[in-house]
Length: 126
Image (cartoon, rainbow, N blue to C red; front, side, top):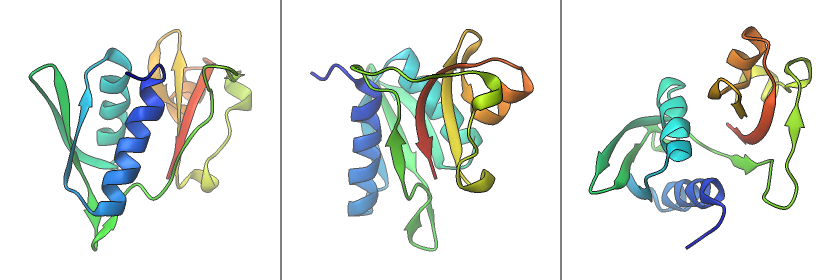
């Protein structure tokens, strides 16, 4: 069992993308479910559903290339990174997304800027 469930989740997606697998299975948690909802809304994955206390995620491919080409964990268990809403970076000039854990829930950097709320900078995805 891993302590950093988000890093494990991103690694599962990265490994499945390298193998061109269509689906992955990840342990269910509120954080993973929230991140999966964001990835679905931002068109990085096709769908996810809850099956036997696990999340089954269907990855998205565009012209046989994975929609998620890179994922990077920013805040780590040993070093938490917090940003104010004015300091949320643009990822690839808006081509990627940043995911933050805020007092209003897990959301993208763009939504956090609109709601004027900062938080823990979890990861970058493009």
